[in-house]
Image (cartoon, rainbow, N blue to C red):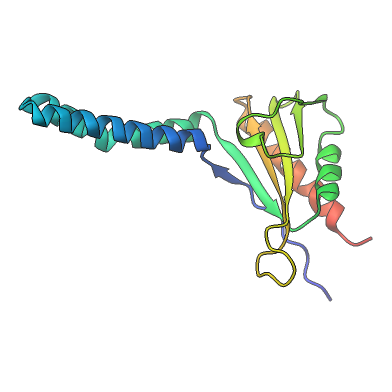
Length: 170
């Protein structure tokens, strides 16, 4: 008897723009600290050194809390993911998105969902190839616009459940 398929695990990710802002702010504050060190202004040197050590981490944390990106990966093809997302959004109003930005720029399909307000996108990656230890997989992204955590959690569970039903052998 085969083991039951494991449910996809949603993970919270940090957008790439937050990491870029982390490095830019770290470099800028460090540069200013060195500049004021060379001008013998120790008060501003201390200020910018403290900002260089704390501000970039605060920026990433604010992005992580304010603009979370939820994602999961599953070893299924793109058509299975599309069926699962459409099944999970069957009772909701959805609209396809033509302009893909941010985490959705590489997605093959992106949908705007009305309730809860969020954007869902997915893409298929064949990074492993034949005989590779890294199997091909689909990645699903969810970017919430709604602050209703319970509705978003239920929607994520609905997508995961629909994916399990789509993967189950008939």
